[in-house]
Length: 335
Ligand SMILES: NC(=O)c1ccc[n+]([C@@H]2O[C@H](COP(=O)([O-])OP(=O)(O)OC[C@H]3O[C@@H](n4cnc5c(N)ncnc54)[C@H](O)[C@@H]3O)[C@@H](O)[C@H]2O)c1
Ligand SMILES: N[C@H](C(=O)O)[C@H](O)COP(=O)(O)O
Image (cartoon, rainbow, N blue to C red; front, side):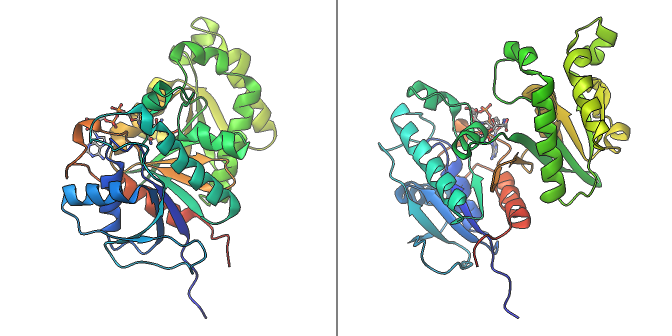
């Protein structure tokens, strides 16, 4: 019997002034058995590899060629040209279009089944906005392009298991969060979270902890009403449908080990309620997964690290973990 085909993964190189190209060169230098296609400027990749002292052999990617694994140090590239030469550590809004072109190429390829999953290196949200394009992150970009609602979840290996933190809201100012905590949205996002925990993560009956928004989950309404008006009704609706969803749980104690052991995932109300805990536990090896897309997308747990760009100082641990997770979870869509 023929061996199952490896999933074909699109790797986007992210902000050119950051560490993305170096990370991709380091990933290519591993012996990870995968059908990897970098989406990037080939010269930028070659330059990053040289600066990091990595022997990288780039080949041009032919979408019609049979999927194949690659020898260590080899990488196929779907070329997207930089708009202007890039200097490590120096953002240039003129290259925002390059960043968006890479994401669009990956999204279109994944949407058409050319790629089984997308793995993204970090982008700089600010410089894309400085270029005049409203952009809050990959998660929202891919959701908008696919025309669907999504959930951001980060996962990290934890003593004896996995810490998974999903977010009710993503990249918005803290002042805008309370207005975004709405029963219907919470129900929709919890359905996506549960659906992908079952379908992709193979957890038959996921147990989900839903956090409160306010201190002590609102203290019975004395410290805020979102728990009473929006979060508890969303939980009650889903519990009536048979979901194993508990809460609203006070966020300050939700992450103590005895509590965490009861759940497969924690659903936090906002970015900096959930992600500092996850990154404290697993920074450098955790993975960001976008749930709800028609294809799989994983990413690193860190940013562009402009302070490290242009040498051999970036740790590729999270990109390697994101690639491994994509290989594990992606279902090949082509024969
Ligand atoms: N997946 C993504 O695209 C993603 C994720 C997070 C942040 N960002 C963006 O990155 C930009 C910079 O964000 P930031 O400065 O808050 O966070 P950052 O993660 O870039 O840097 C935080 C600290 O971690 C270090 N660091 C980050 N990655 C590292 C690596 N691989 N190896 C070793 N050290 C590493 C940096 O040197 C810095 O000291 C922002 O625009 C932010 O929006 C993008
Ligand atoms: N919220 C993510 C984090 O803090 O790691 C990060 O900003 C990346 O988000 P996107 O994957 O949406 O770009």
